[in-house]
Amino acid sequence: MSVIAEIIDTLENKVEKLFFKIKTLEKNNQDLTLELRNAAVLLQTQSKEIDDLKTQLETLKIANALLGSDENKRDTKLKINSIIREIDYCIAQLSD
Image (cartoon, rainbow, N blue to C red; front, side):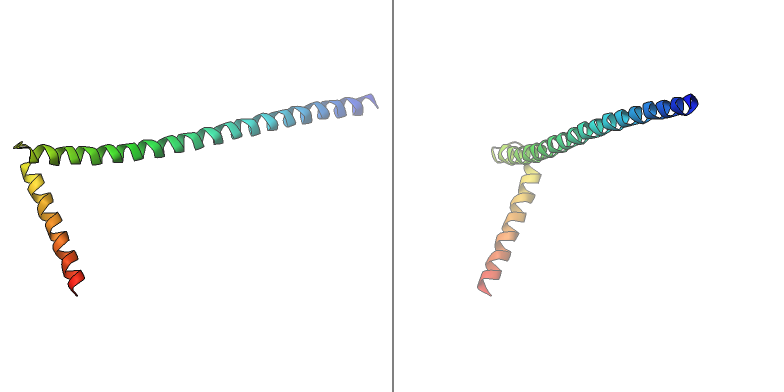
């Protein structure tokens, strides 16, 4: 009978260890999920900030070219021509 009791005790100990390990892994999983969500939010925020900075850079390039800088004159002329074409297209749409 003592052999069966020892087996049961050993089995109970192993089951307890498994439950503890499961709880630990679940907690670790929750922590990692939270960290992943935070990283995703940070990535989204940084991506938006990069887009905003790109827009600001483009605006500054155009402003610099309009102020007489030869560096970005060609780009500015192309952008102005593009805007004029868009305006012409809108006017044509309105007149129809």
